Picture 1: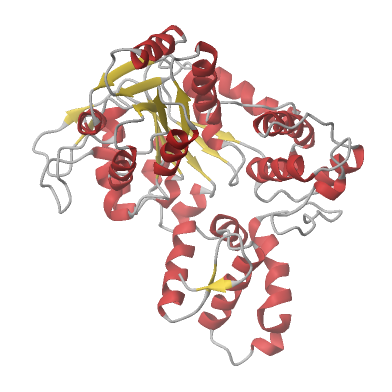
Picture 2: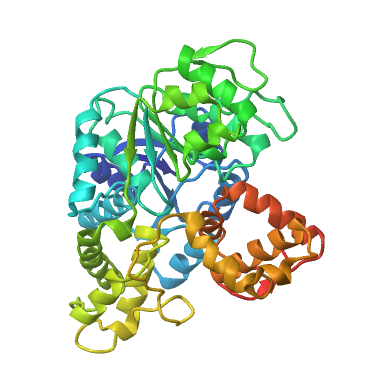
Length: 463
């Protein structure tokens, strides 16, 4: 855990940093927000920041957002009244930590932040085989490709590999290739010099340099533009990078982990992914099975999430009924572990009896969760077929005659998005296309004046 303290180390905040150090955190300290930004731009990195509540927290949050630096912020201060805490949270802090510091509370905060991305929970034999292979390759420096559907826990597996590697005491840095615009991803990976492009107000160290000596996770690498893939290949092969606007190569020593929810061999055939890059990445491939193929894990994870969210919401821990558990086992879990977690969180809040019954196992809109038929879902493309049959133009081939392919495609995309309550990732998986392709299509439709289903709703609204 790398902890950045923002504020004076005099008094109670200094005591808090000492407690964090005693609990295994690596602490660095700066006096103000500008110095914090300089530290983060320089590649020193941090997993969490603790900031004096009297400093302008909203300014820090805005600056981090503008520079695409993802950092949980914990506000702390001697003034522990409700107003101070509320203002800190409203400004963008994740938590408010009262001072004088309580050692157990600080330990709990550090543990919670670390647990969010590194706790691997399983019991199913199918998952046990994957973890056994991960344990075998973890100490090496070999590149690893982690493949699996959205929500199966690919990032958690990457963190698991890092913590069991010979680089575990060095940084673990993650880049979401799907979430960063194409024109900014190169700068995010390799950094830039001041003035390299409009908005480059200072030198910024990229993720490669920040992860130097440690591990770099390229999350959803299949979404990376193929031209940038060539620069990535050079960085991996030659272990040097060039900052945008830079004049000399910079050596780096990192282990590369990559995740994808797509078949990269198929992407190579489609000419959207470089074959030589694939060969460099998949020295070892870890294939994480979907949750519907791990029935034992449904039970194990359900028990874990019940305990987690009961404690988080101050609710007595209740057992889940056999009927509710059977209902969970019959669910499709297209969103995998992430969807199960949200479902159990809702169930903990909605359950009214002495245990958690099937009436509490619901979708976000209160409808019943979809269940599998006697045959398992074979693939994303197979899952898309009944939606196309049922919803596009009345479902019969005859009614589609006379319509253009573009119109039929538009109806299929929009109806699938409605079916997924506006969830872009789920819709892309069902349609068998990348999230970037889906976003581009939706942008096109919005420009044509079409209403787009918003997230969490089956109703359409313009984007």
